[in-house]
Length: 501
Image 1 (tube, rainbow, N blue to C red):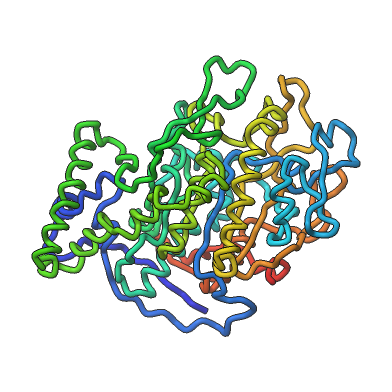
Image 2: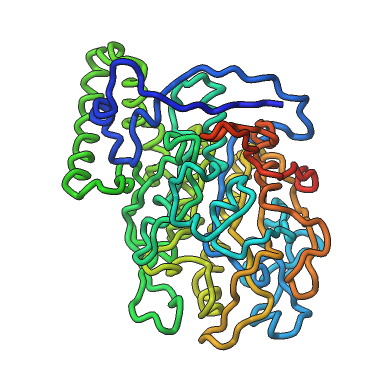
């Protein structure tokens, strides 16, 4: 078993936290050089012999549909159920014999032979528990959501992967950040809800938080309202974007308390250091900087990272294929980042404007939002994403996880306008692909209402353990928290061989 034990990091000799912040200019990114570049050696015990497909995936792309899609109108339709369960949408066959999915996902149906559909995910918490879904934590309470950086929480799966790769490389900084989040820090664009817990490093330290991009584009169309009582229109970029939008690392949200003037100054520092880097490279003086300074320069001005995020370099036909939406463009950027060498890339379909204005949390206006916005965007972008990875020869070595926090109620609530389905975690669906995942498989069975699992129950922790396994990390990986207690990074999850090819 591989056991890696975390320890408290300290600033490097001779440099203060303020010095590092000023030299790197990384305060504008919400992290400091001290957080990114405190390097140390670590001894690791040899792992036990690797079972099937251990280390098959070179990288992972997480696609997280915040708010939770309905299993009935995505991957587990119930066309024979009563109308109050079945709903307004029918089912269509896919390229996998016996597998039917929602009729508004025809393009996904055409690539289903490259997916494993899991219909039997379940857990006890029908809440927006991103932190629960994406970490090994064993229990969950709503107050966790207001504590995104609480060190007592458990680390996000992407941060665990980043930490392990950091230790394996003995602290050598990567040319491309290993752990990147798109399109912006989760929850940062919601106008009436605070940033949520979930994709953060917790007790591993903020140096292992995802490095977030920001997106500068504008929405091109008004999306259907979240509720009938919504009084203003939302031009949600996930529904469509105007030309010219960009993903940038140096535009990420500032630290709490960093005012507008200070943030602008930090961004100016980044640009000034970019110019200085070019001069130093030309005159051969970069070598005189210590190892950490060089790593900081690399992260700030890495052509590889910036070029990967520059979609102007992508074939316009590919952009069109994914669709003119933020979801589609973020998936293109995720593929480009993996090609550039990033290990774990997350794409969050995240709130924009009023809470839920861009998410799948359809307590009301359920069918109009699905028909006119959510399903068509997902169908085009996700199907193009899987096809594109496969055509480039990347799918076999890139693990794709399309997940959410939970599912939605079997019983439709017809009281709100447009109807609604509410939170439900006793049965829900996910789509997995690549990196050792089987092609054209269905795992799990639910009852005739889609409300309970009747065969092959799968936990979110099982998905985490299987992810670590496929990325070449012992799924029983244990790290010590800040109280020196051993913590299993996949909780009580197990590798699910049913998912593997």
